Length: 288
Image (cartoon, rainbow, N blue to C red):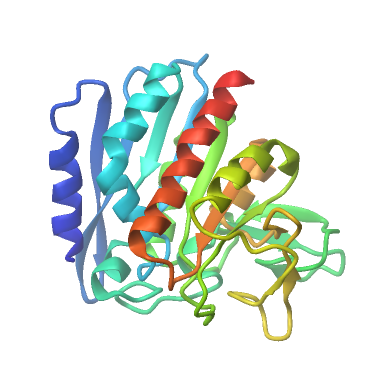
């Protein structure tokens, strides 16, 4: 599906709503022009808690954007019913989505590609975008704040937009992925998070009734050569890899989670997993 058609279908599905603001921002690549869409609740006050949803960072991971396309109204209704506000980036890498490639149309994969938001300075002075098994670091920085670091166009734009967001009010961030790197034929779900994983146990139980959850298994997807991290009994992996969830966690959002379904998962099931996480995290924040 062309990114322009996706964006138009999404906007059309939400056009009768009076409670949201839809914005479009241009992306200029060497090989073409695209647009990045932002959807946000209207009238966000300084007292409001906000749920941020990011999808489509990797262009070939279709399940996230299609979840927002199919269930956008349901998600917005559920959040607003609980008096929570939303900020949604439904397709961060539109050119990759259109070309069905992980990276953008210009194949810009510097650093972590579209998901490059943090650089860590280690004790020895070296910089990295992924702590892997390391937990100790000296400082962290927005990757866009470091000189001579190239970022893909969509990532550079996301940095500009995020720096204007009310980041201190983000109560939860959900980054939706679809693991197209792992080659397993059997499909399952797993997730990346940082702390307070116990609060997600009831949600994981609901996910396990849709598709199996990957428990106590090593995963190599997206890691440096020879590095694998093991999921826990609920399918969680702790990984500080410079992504948008890592950034928001460093800025104080403790409920930061990246959700994954293996690429072989039937699309309807992957979308249902995504929806289940979103609706239940909204309920979780509402009760806090």
